[in-house]
Image (cartoon, rainbow, N blue to C red):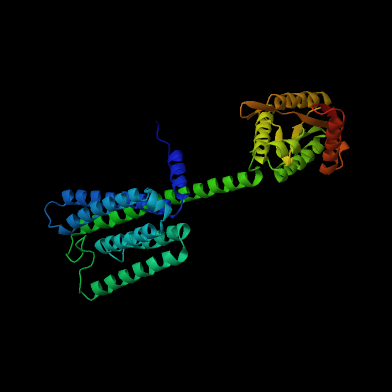
Length: 378
């Protein structure tokens, strides 16, 4: 499978949409690569400076590898079902481990350098997006207090400053330049990496927003547009048609004897009837048509640009589709029928949405009065 950055971001965003355990696991996965790169950098630097006693780089390499391993193991724990169901302890553990590792890495490379500032800025920012503010602030304050204490102790010569880089040893200009350049490159890479994380967060938000929008516009039982969405779409279509003075057709469909079905067979069978009818109608729609549940057992079908002939043809297809539905009742089956009222008008001849719905509704009731299971053109 070809690698796709877009797919990777979508997968990352999907991870963030899970509960606290999923988000905490994401923090662990996000933390592992930087620590692994830190270990690789330390090993490379030891090779570059073979003639020097760079004991601190060995410490950084060991720390980076250990931190990456720990973060990966913590991430895997986040997929345990017990952790997913009760994520509080896991989330707290991950955040405090993250803070502890961040303090340790900042101390090893220097508490007052560019990378430390980047970590101080990026960590709490992402944390505040994903987790409760009180929890993140408590971890951040402890993190900041620890860094301040280490900086003070280093300034008082109680402990060495940046022991991983050997800053207590006088470095030659070329080696000082190497470490400075490494920090600048690492900071740039960290910015790119955090940008990727932010984009993943945005993808997660956009996906969630689309889901919420879809759910708010969809009838929960049948999966077609709900009353508000179908009426909104009808009003939009009507406005667009009025600009071109085009035709618009509307079908009002009512399942015959639906109350009797509910009373005789129960509401569960009634729900199955609604679901089956909605699926049958969707299968008969043109790409630009829309079907929605208007209320109870009534469905509205919007047919942009359809004249009387096209509206009647589609209405007959819908009636036939409903007639083909059979609901299982033990060894027997329950057939369904529907009465449909169809109207088609030029947009300029329609006063408003309500008047068009009334015309379709009147046509539908006429279909019922004249025997049901038929189409009536209004």
